[in-house]
Length: 119
Image (cartoon, rainbow, N blue to C red):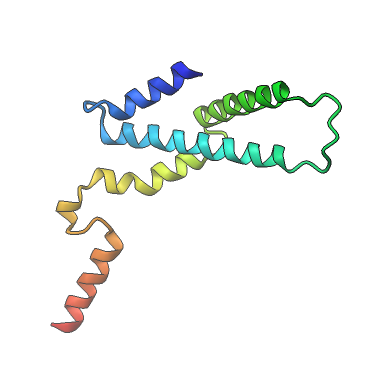
């Protein structure tokens, strides 16, 4: 698990990696974190505190298991959050802000409409 995390961090820190590769790595990491938090919230929302086999060690093992499961789900794209994030931000990575005039295409379009209406 630690090796996979360091490999992902290395992909983000690598200046030679393309921006699209960095975006994909960041999106997968976000999906893993989101899934991990979702699993943790699900585990915390138990109906009663009487757990016959419950202990701190069991809770720690379940946390590690949930973390590993979240990483695997994110790598497989099972939930699809990473794909949606890549699709959302891919246009911004493909076109630098300097060529479009603004970092947000919607802002550029609104500015163009305002210029056309005023002039």
